[in-house]
Length: 200
View 1 (cartoon, rainbow, N blue to C red):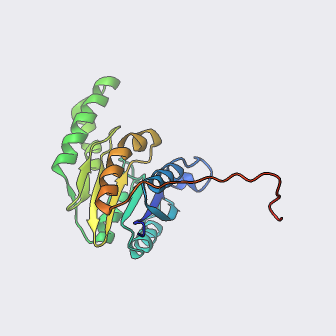
View 2 (view 1 turned 180 degrees about the vertical axis):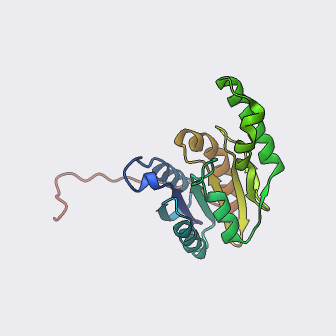
View 3 (view 1 turned 45 degrees about the vertical axis):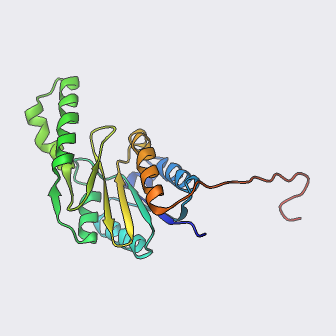
């Protein structure tokens, strides 16, 4: 029985220019493989809309059962993931009511903790509730919700790039999509050989 395929798209220029060491690719690839997916691609993309569109289209053209993206869900000008997925999948970017509820709750918490005015903070934070039409919001571990969207043969899951947030949100999401794809946990056998060199 063949394993369902998966791909990972990591976004953030800081991952390519040495400012930040990637943790999410290793974590996502490992957990996907352990859950029974065959991981065919792990791609790093900068915060460049043209490159991000190209890489996203390339990965979707491979028709994986699951495509996981990491990063680009915040409030700054270079947080492009939701808008790019919306464009490439042919869905309008809309304010999702459930995502907005999540953002409102977390923004109120941040405002209280930092002594900021909630009403002034919310308009900027509400950008994180703009999702491709048809998405299902995923509850955040920090402030930014993730989302899941079906596009043709592929389930797309978009998660924040902050490692602790992604790692807190991912296990339940992975379990649900592994079950949907019919993935069975992998069995791994390690054989250790001593006394032979690599070229012998």
